[in-house]
Image 1 (cartoon, rainbow, N blue to C red):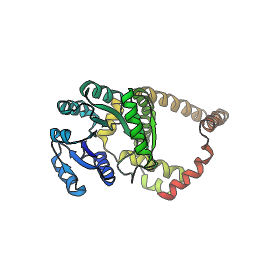
Image 2: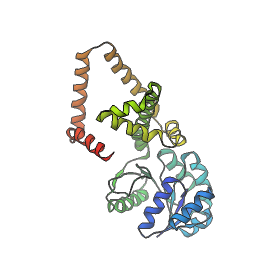
Image 3: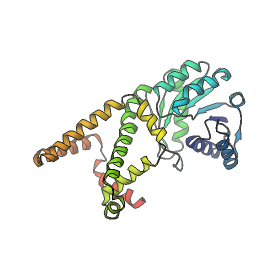
Image 4: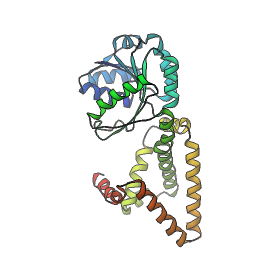
Length: 289
């Protein structure tokens, strides 16, 4: 199968090109960054082409472009779409991109997809993917994509674009927000090297998470924070809960602290049958560090 990756010189575009190429697919990469495009061609040995040529020659199109330029990208490819051509996107937000694909790519069969991992992943095994079909034709396509990914031991979930975005407000938005605010707090305190030298297990895992976030592209994280629907409501709730717990600590109300933490333990244990393994898993993470 011949697959074109629009935005294929970006990090996830390169990851997909390498992954799909290993599967025996012929890959065509398009990107406006000619320097990075040449590097991808040299490193992976994939073909490069113009948008019109890639659209004409390819069976499947993958849109791996930044969400800020997504509408521009679908407008650009729209004149070249063939009836029934398969087009997927891999943006971290789904409702708006899926709506834009429906608006500009009416001839195609489109599918919103979201690989929930970064380009550092070795392969698709044990990685989460979300697919967001909105019609019978898209559901049929999603089932084919799911079967393909599951053969590579990926974990695939289907949901609506809106449900996806509601969940990403927590999965991405809140997780990134907590990490960035924690990093800012630690930076204000200073003495990071001293803390690391005596850091316990929880602190080591926390700082690994924090540093993994703040070492990434600020433009990407800013875009997610600004464009993820519902993220403000989730972060406002987090701030309210943080204030509540800070007040308990400030008032030295040990009884309330224990009561609230016990209630949390019960809630998490009820929702997660593997809750009791979390402490053990933390030490497994430390062994990997």
